Image (cartoon, rainbow, N blue to C red; front, side, top):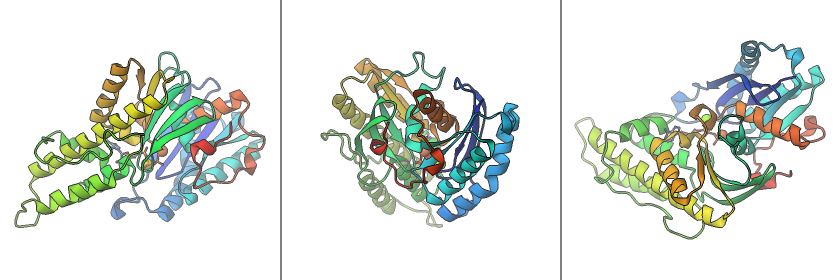
Length: 347
Ligand code: ATP
Ligand code: MG
Ligand code: FE
C-alpha cells in the first residue's frame, strides 16, 4: 500500500501520501504562523503547533489522496536533525499510527530527505543517478555534500557560523522586512543596485568549500548604521534596496565559488543538486546553473515547494530505503535525534 510521510523538524507541519513508485498522491504543508510575533521560530511554540495541526493535516492528506488509513503500507517521519519537540510530536504520531495499523515505521533523516529529493520520479530526466554534489542551503543548514549513494554521504564543507538562510533572515530583519526574510529581501533587491553599497564576499577564492556569513551580516549592520535617516529614523527605501541587492550578490557569488571548490573535491560528480529554502532565490539559482553549465555537468533544482521543508521528500527517502532493504529492522526503536549529521548515517 501507499506510504504516509510526516515532517515536523522545524516550523513546517507537513504530510504527504506517495504510492510505492514514488508518485505523489497528496501533499500538504502548513507553515506555522504562530512565530510571526517573535521574528523567529520559538521551539516550544513549534512543538505545540505541530501537536495541534498534525492530526487534522494527516487526515486531510489521506482524504486528498483517496487513501484510507487501513490501506497504508508504511508510515514515515523525520526523526532528526531538528528541534526536539517537533521531532517527538511527528515521530510519535507516526509510530503510533504504524503500530496500530501493523505496518512498518520508517525513521528518516531530514537531511537525507533533502539530499534525495532530486531523485523523485520525473524531476530530473535521468533520475539523478549517484554520485552527485548537493548544496543544501536552508535556514538551519549550509553545506556541500558528496552524495555517493543511498546512505553514503560525505560532508565536504559547511558553514563555520551562520547558515545562508539564517543570514538572509537576519539581514531582512535589519532592513525592517519582517520574517521569514528571504523572499521579502529578494523582492526588495529587484529594485536595488548591488554596486552602490558593495559588501564583502567571505571566503571567496579560499581553498576548501566552507562558508561564513556572520562577517557579511556585520558589514550590512555597519552600512545601515552609517546611512541617512528620515525624521522617523527610517533609512531610505532605495538604500535598503541597494543593500539588499549587494547582500544577495555577495551570497550568490560566494555560494557559486564554494560549490566550484566542492566540485574540484568531487571529480566524479556529473550533476549539481541544490536543495533547501534558499534555493528558491532566482539569482542564486542562476549563478549555480551558470557554474554547472560552465563545468559541463547537469543542474537540478527541485521545484520550490520541494526545496523548502515538506513531507514528500520524507516519503521518497523512506521509499528509497525500503526498496534497498535499508529501512532498519525496527523503526519503532529509533529515538528522535536533534543532532544527526549525514555522515553518521549508516547505509
Ligand atoms: P531546515 O534548515 O531544518 O531545513 P528551515 O525551515 O530553516 O529548516 P527551509 O524551510 O528549507 O528551512 O527554508 C527556509 C529558509 O529559506 C529561510 O531562512 C528563508 O529566509 C530562506 N528563503 C526562502 N525563500 C528565499 C529566497 N527567495 N531567497 C533567499 N532565501 C530564501
Ligand atoms: Mg522552515
Ligand atoms: Fe529542511
